[in-house]
Amino acid sequence: MVPLKYQKNENLEKKYYKLITQSRNERFIEEIDEKCQCYLKMPFKNLVCASPEELEQLHSNVKDRTDYGQMKDAFKHISSIKQNNYIVSILFQNMPKEAKLLIYEQVGQNVCLYCNRNFIEDLKIVKNRNGRKPVGTFELDHFYSKDEFPMFAVSFYNLIPVCGTCNRIKSNTVFNINPYLMYDKKDNISFEYNILGSNYMENEDELEIRIKSSSKEALEDAQNLRLEEIYNRHKDIVQEIIKKMKYYNSEYIECLFKDTGALFQSKDELYPYYGATGQIGFIDDFLFNGEYILLGEDAAPFLDKKAQKAYMIKGKSWVNNHAHILQSLVFPEYLTNCLNSIDYFDYVYGTTRLKLTQENMNTILVPVPSIEEQCKIAQAINNLFVLIESIKASLS
Image 1 (cartoon, rainbow, N blue to C red):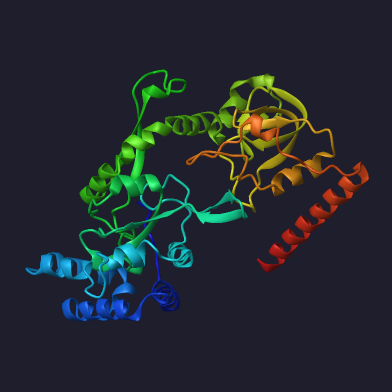
Image 2 (cartoon, rainbow, N blue to C red):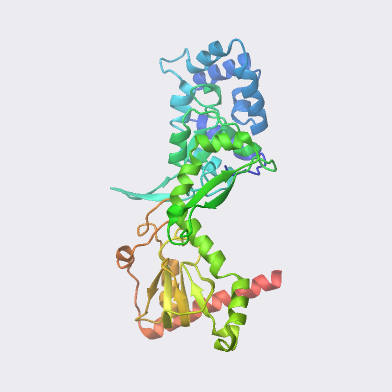
């Protein structure tokens, strides 16, 4: 799980409460409020805005009560209407999109809080008859099950933004550790890899990913989420990291330079090694010699508008298989800037590692003005970057 360092935000919580109740029948809200006062000794608004610590205490008190079954039924049935479980079926399932986004904003994470694997930050674009409509990609999991604890079904800090996979795997399972309450604790999960054979650098089946934690509760939650099984599907990433660590560290460069004697007169004769987002290290051989534009194929930050997806290289180099290698027919700096400004949403696919295939890349359209205009545009953009760096330097 991803630990959350949060601060209660009363303005945000009040805004959230208003959004989920403003278009609802006042009589229904009043009846829920009466039940909260009767069983929990607090108004409904306070329950909705209760802190993670307060919710934990309420949950502990509620589940041990002798009248728990009666209380659960009371919150599930609103006498004013025939609709069962009004809090869940009306207030939660019809929650305004704006209210859901407030929860996401408070969390401040762009990956699933349970698996730390799938991205949840994007607002994907769904095309319909009315054009392009943004739809949130995350789902809201009830840390305390909405079926067992309907009174917490719309409590702000009981709703955890997660990916759809984790939401369905968890279902009604009660986790031991709340992401809101694990910061600065020793409940964090880490990973290690075991080598099972001598050919692990080429055969990923000879690698095994294991989950570690000093907390039995955290390991139990990870087991319920099947995290070890899920992460073992990404052994190719671990393999790539091992290769980088093994081949391109500073000690390797020093040894390579010393051991080759007269073969290399200086470290400058070692060749840069490039990947999806930039130079990774150095290597003693090269594949390319010239001027190229590299565009990420996978593992590049395609949906981050501020991040670099394409960059230029010159001279002798080695490029791995995570980047497309382009030779520009237009002004290279201009094309690089264009590739870094494109919205890649419609061109990439995947959840854990977005991928831009060559087929999809070839469908990208780039405006091509005259070569003089391309040079002017590239120079203007370069001047802006120089100005930005100058401002940053003066502020620091």
